[in-house]
Image (cartoon, rainbow, N blue to C red; front, side, top):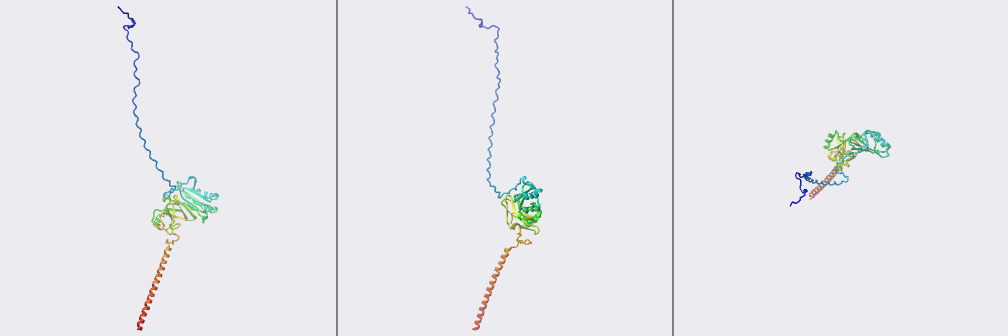
Length: 318
């Protein structure tokens, strides 16, 4: 018996099976390289500890070299204009003291300035700076002490001298600070001068002012023997009545071989009144002692003579 098979269950001979149309795709993404591990951070350097603040000295400059005062440019006057400015201020200012600072050079004050001072009863102060506007020195004149107004005064002060060898021969010192005045001779009146010394001496130092007397070839103490000047804020102040060659030293008059002009004679010899008085007293004491001894001896001789005479008399009587 034959079974009936449907034709649909069989493929027709000669038919090739179809190839699948979709080919598996190649993966498009290539695996990325693994990331390199990052370098570890370097540890930061430890901060340096802050420097401790220096203790405040409350402005005390003792024992220190102090720089010169710097004058602002707007307060400076050209040296050529100093006399005119002073005359105008002495005439019109209501102030009792007129101050001016000459830039980079010292002026020559005219006699008219000193006359105006007396006429208007006003004092003047004239400062002088160096090329960096640092105050080097300052002159002050008081109207009531001006006795010779009819003179011109060059206010220039230099800090060296051509007489250094002569001074050194007397003093034996080569560490002096010279104050060489361009003007020589008397001043219209006493001048108080403020001079910068902070480049050589420290605040609180004591220095002595000396004058080289060229005529007598000797060094003289100024302001009294061993009357020291104290350095303050880098400056010293002193008063003089005439100009020539001066110098500063930390050595006393005995070391410098300076004389006191009030007690020295024209030969530079100092009269030692105290020693003379002591010598006189000693001589008087010696004389009195000698007379006392002589009187005692004479009395002893007299007594001895009387005794001898008495003995002889007794022998004769026997």
